[in-house]
Length: 279
Image (tube, rainbow, N blue to C red; front, side, top):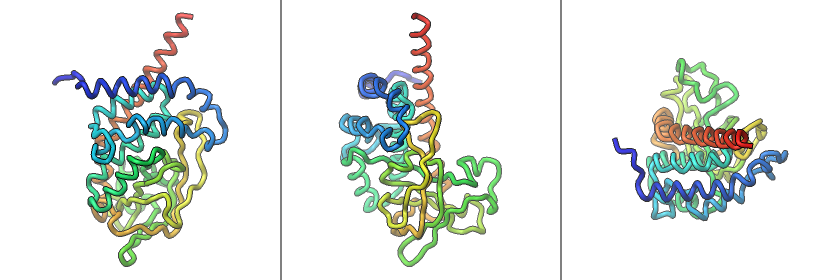
């Protein structure tokens, strides 16, 4: 195995490191103390990251991204998390969509990719967790009785979603969501849950409570409420009952990126500990 970074990876690493040192770390602690989440949300940082191409890092170059692979995103995410984990998570959650959109028909996918890369505040979110079912819901057993309640019913050429999610990263600030919903309550989750692209401007969609946390406060988590939210049939990802595959793609690529963020936090902690020991 060759662990040597390419010239492009080294350039992106330096770009992310310089950005974290100059635009994130000097302001993160003060922002962390802001009580109102809307005032705390680091939109200025997001916009500056967009101008440098960091927010849209893994998306195709033809739309304005850098076409970065998972390793390159891990390298950049680690550097950003040294500056602040919450901010890094805002971008990391947005990178995740790149691992799924390739499975969506170009006629649906491409307009979203154009918007995502063009709009400097365009963030995305993955919405599966509910009050009765966490992200480990299929880790121990898979049975129709699992308390996963968000439903999707097919009506004509559309899908209608009803239910609630909570603890969703980027929940109150995302422009586009991947939402898991049951299409058949009699089936286990592996066979009975589908994933849908849901735009934030959809009628019947709203933000519920924004969850306060003791850490990672520059990343916002919230409830998502679905009241007869209608999305086109072609916003179904991969096909009916295939959330397990969607989840697999997200985990295979998204988990290493999340782990890289954690390494960045460890580096930041070591850096501060070392600085205190020298005082």
